[in-house]
Image 1 (cartoon, rainbow, N blue to C red):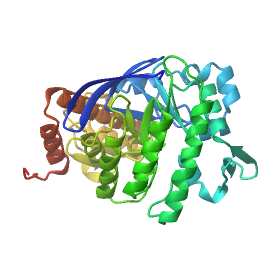
Image 2: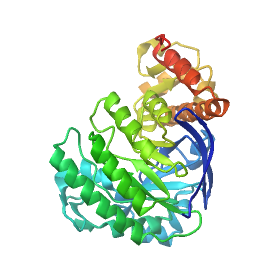
Image 3: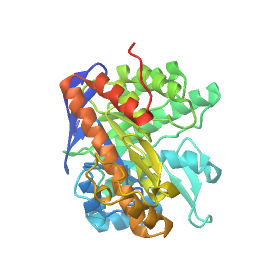
Image 4: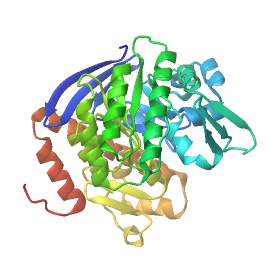
Length: 374
């Protein structure tokens, strides 16, 4: 294994660790800012780093479409091309196979799809192609190509999915070029079927990966189902490898997943919310378009140190109502700052052996509801 992971502390199922890459370390549990097309929308990379973000995510599908893996490689990889000097994980394109399903045909060899940009050019992506493009991108963490199903899904469809993506995972692992500070993650599938989750996890562990993702969740199932699938899956994965829950999520999803042994997260939620006038705070979310903020002199969150919270809610509201780009920039940075503050709090609580207490306090503040002790 070429990617190193240190497990520093545990508190129940929660884990505190550190991942070592060729472009620096990142602390876990970690939230990765989503930079789909080599940019975290509305922010410079310096602004992203100022939030405390240590690792970002890029997307193979979108980057192969524009500007293309060959060009990014020619420009020195994503780190030089986009100006992010820290670790980068790239999603393989499997989620886009689901989200663009009307443009996609699945085959054993790979996936055929029509360009979502012009709708006229057909492409074919094999597991080996996805790994090669991620190599061109100079991604520190490569993800295997998989297929993510909408839930609910018929059992026979899930069985076929698990078998195929396991074969694709082996092909992806064989195509990956091992080098120090770089790694490849397998992706556990199985939808909401515990026995198929177990089948997928055991097969991937047999193949051997630098880390393991739990995929195919937060795609339509209730939160309690997601938590059950995580709790069933994580004990099947090696203790000395990082665990990544793909595409999740809300602050409450993150706390519940950390409690069940997850180390890494990504989601467009904080950045997309920032571009649509929503602010995350310790006391829940706020819609900054709301007229009640028009003459509110207080900051968005008086416990936050971000640039937006040095200004008034009234000013942020003004920017949003005027459609000023600065409003989206400030709220996006604020939301990422909030998420990274949450992750820092989680890491500190695990080290101190008080994660359960931290989780309870956070949820009570965030939801304004008392939680009875079990």
